[in-house]
Image (cartoon, rainbow, N blue to C red):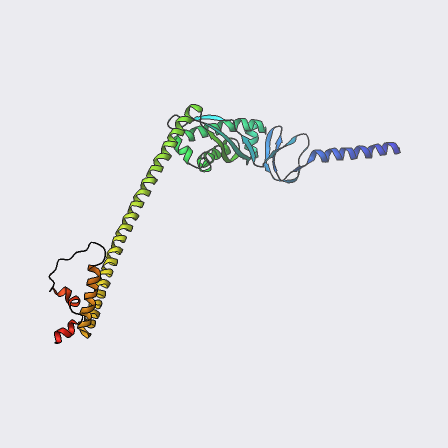
Length: 296
């Protein structure tokens, strides 16, 4: 009797444990879930927490709602001028509608990747096809992908229940047959810009040089004018001093000037003067006291 009672208790506990394990389930913070009954969705977008389901008839499918990364295959695209570029990119995507995601992919992440990748490839092909090579090289890669990411996000939400958070370009290469021509054009463009900057620099240098020359001429003219003015004032002052000195003792000043004339005339070798002996030049040589002679 005791053994039968113990068996009943153990069986009840086992049944309760089985019922609890098959009736209760937990959805993590990084997950969302849908409740199915024989494969049909009967409850959508179940939030994180502890929930209850009916065993056997109801099943739960959980999906990771964190942002996932899809590293796309390297692809070759043609630009607007039909030049090839080789693009390596990746996509950030996230499940936002669990029900639509389950219906489109059966909850298989690899199936979702297989559906997303062709769409990304098509979007990038269209984007690069509307731009020429110069625009692709010149534009920032982040800005280049804004349009495709927004368009693809709207499409994928509708088709797969996923959001395209971002499309990023890791690398853009040129085929070898295109690289040489592109580099030559880039080199020519840089040389043209260098010539323009050099010409502008020369023009600016000529302008500065012309302004400096003009300023120099103005300064020289002003300095010459000032020098002539000062020289004239000095000559006038010297003449005034000379005249004043001359008037104080005319005879002495005449004698002093004659001595200077003698010194300058007989300085050096081979100097010869042809003058009359009675010339006024010999006045102080003919008479030791010409002043007294005049008075006599």
